Length: 317
Image (cartoon, rainbow, N blue to C red; front, side, top):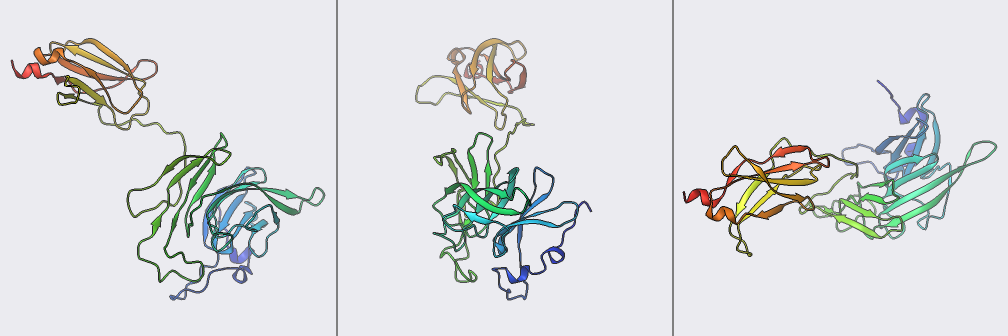
């Protein structure tokens, strides 16, 4: 076991602070932990939804270093028009004493979910927590009963998942009267530092996401690129189409042509600017010609080949 921490050992009075009642099955979800993260100093930051609180734990001793939000906050929250966050998710210490979180704003303010940044301040002499100053807020304009996430990107943009809601929105008590299907909010929203919307994505289904993260990714498919010949298009010309679904390193395409299946010469080079590209191969309508497309990276190294395709002229031979 790398780390084990029990709330009962370190926050024995937390049952007095919870917003959650006893369920019909007699279960009592006092705190409801929904995120755990490592702080820059190596200690642990934990989000407790049902306490409306984020705490920081000493990784070695388990001692609670501070509590942010809720009924026994170590900090006075300043600058937050809602007074504080509620039912939050994805709490992170992204820099020394800088906390970001997704605020579900459950039964607080206008109940619109928010992406929040707080700067924590401590007494210069005693080191005791004093003030948590809101330094950034983005209001989504939607309600989010549960789930959701917020990450501040390196360029200052916000990457947000808006979780889900139930209609009618249940502010107090349980949601027994709500429809059996939930309302899936946008699973990914990105804004610039000033809050302007850049990207908004949602599922085409009755579903939702717990958390969304934007990160570098390289796609190297195990399958080949695909090439097909198109003779039925609005331009009424013979075209060779080629693409490679999932490949992220393709910088250009080299199309080769031959009058046999094993002898090919360069025919055209196309810079990759979209998912699928094509070239005209009108000569293949009259002659039997063979084509293959090669996917190239930025240094012109071949990443993959399509299968060889034959032109319509081969079928008339």
